[in-house]
Structures are given as C-alpha cells and as structure tokens.
Length: 398
Image 1 (cartoon, helix red, strand yellow):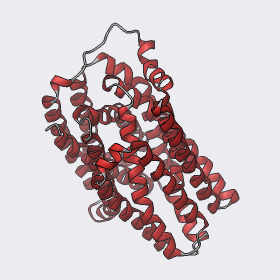
Image 2 (cartoon, helix red, strand yellow):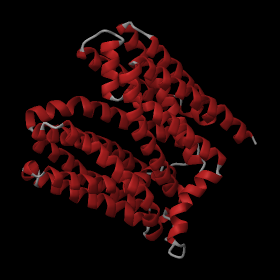
Image 3 (cartoon, rainbow, N blue to C red):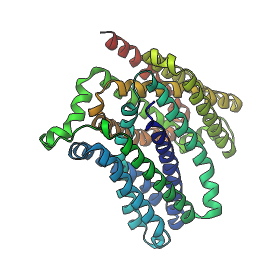
Image 4 (tube, rainbow, N blue to C red):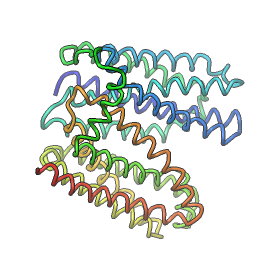
C-alpha cells in the first residue's frame, strides 16, 4: 500500500472518534442547559441540513482549488472552529442559538470534507489492496465509534462537557498534522485545477456521472434503500422494540447495542481475513451480505425471545461489514478517481435526505402500527438491495 495510506487510516479513525465525542457532548450539553427536547433535536437537524447544502456546493470547491490545498485548508478551518467552541464553551451556556450557529458552520465544513476524505482511499490504494484497505478502515472506524459511544457518556459525567470537548479539539489538531503529512506525500497524484468549466456544469457533473453510469446508479440506489432501512436502528425504535416486543427493561437496550457492536467488530476482522475473496467476488459478496442481513432483520422483528435477539444482532455485524466493504469498493471502482469527490458529494446528499425522511416515517409507523412492523419493513428493504445486486451482476457481465 502507498505509505500515505497509514496516516490516512489514522486520520479517518480519529475523525470518527471526534465525531462521536462532538455529538455526545453537544447533545448532552444542550439538553442539560435547556431541558428542551426541541433544542436537542435541532442539533442533528442543523447538522444534516448544513451537510446537504455543503454537498451541493462541494463540486465548485473541488473544481476551483487544488486537492492538496483543500486537504489542509478544510481540516484547518474545522480545527480552528472546534478549538474556538472549546474556548468559549462555558460562555455559550447562555447563548444556545450562537452555539447552534457554530454547529451549522462546523457541519457545513464536514459536508465539504467528507467527500474529499472518502476519495482518498482509491487514490492511495489500487487493485487487489482496495478491499483490504476498505476493510481496515471500516473495522477501525466502527470500533472507535462503538468505544466512543460507550465511553463518552461516562467521561462527560466525570469530567464535564467542557473538558470532554477539549479532547475533541486536541484530536482535531492531531488530524490536521496527519492531513498535512498526507498532502505532502501525495502531491504527485493530485489532479489539475479546472477553471474553464461553467459553474452550472460543475454543479451538475456529479449528478450526470451518477445518472449515466448504470452500475453507479444502481449501487447508489442500493445505498439509498439501505439508508432508509438503517433508520430502524435509531435509539428510540430499538428501545421501543426492547420494551414492547421483548418485554424487557432499558438494561436490555444496552445489551442489544453491545451484541451488535461485538458482531460488527467480529465482522471487521472477518472482512480483513476474506479481503482477497471479496475482491474477486464483489457483487456476490454484496448480494450475500444484504440477503443475510435482510433475513436476520426479519427474524429479529418476528422474535420475542431476548437471548435470541442478542444472537441475531451479533450475527448481523459480519453480514453488514462484508456487504459494506464490497459495496464501498464497487462504488469506488465505478468512477474515475478525478471525478470521485464530486460523485461522493452527490451520494452524500442522496443518503442524508433518505435517512432524514425515513427517521420520521419509521417513527410514525412505530407509534401507529407497532414497532415489529418497522423491522419487517427494514428487512424487506434490505431484501430489495440484495435483489439489486443480481441486477448489477448482469450489468457488469455486459
């Protein structure tokens, strides 16, 4: 692998941890200070909205500035913003609207950074190593996310929100140093800046590539369907299922999450071990992973035994990881690397919109028709994604 992959691996892993700390601290802080669920709910809403807007404008940025420059300037802006919030954290207690403005700016920068970060994988790794690289990245980011969510709540409890947020600010400086290192190691693979193209052509370029490329269009549709289905695992729905379907108390909610987390870590190890096989059978791996996840989700929705629910959640982890690694690799392999950041920006818009809508829809279904139906619908959506894999296989064959 390219030597620059290793600082990139560290940077992407740390970014996942920073995101967890940031979300946990801000959500806890806002709710504790205001006692308002509405204010706390504004945080993820503002995050998602800012990222969608950033996704629309990201192609203009990529077209205007050199990739190596963006890899440093955007993380620098984010780091300064996070550090500024950390410094003013105590003063923001009485100015929640001002804090939300800061969150909007930070989320907008996230929306610019995300497609650039995702583009780096196929830039640094090619051929048979791409699946292995995606497996390593998926395993490390999933692991630190799980550990982060498990530990941050306790850290906030003992250190306080302000001190915990400083941990995110410190890690942001580490990420910035890593991104500067990556930029210096990859100057020879950056594409040239294109200033002659009109803004309208730049904005629609990613959408046109997505629409005209049949494989890419189908993979994005599969991701969108799975994004819709993924909302069944939000905390409120999982808790409702534990109480209504399994007849257990909140403690089992934590056990369900822990079981799925253990399965995800196991799945990451399995994906690394099977990287060569997955690379040779990308579409089959996507289909098998989606199909298994679909069947396990349906079985989970129909189940009433708490211990069996733990087993099913543990088994979902490997199925999800294999599907995710194969699908990510297939997506990256379907786009020329110089256009990938623009396509990733469009891809992010589609997925963010789908998840925002599905969260509301599944919440209404759980309230009106019962939480079991939510998981059955989710399982059916994953089944649709699996069937799309067979269609993709025929397209690739042609």
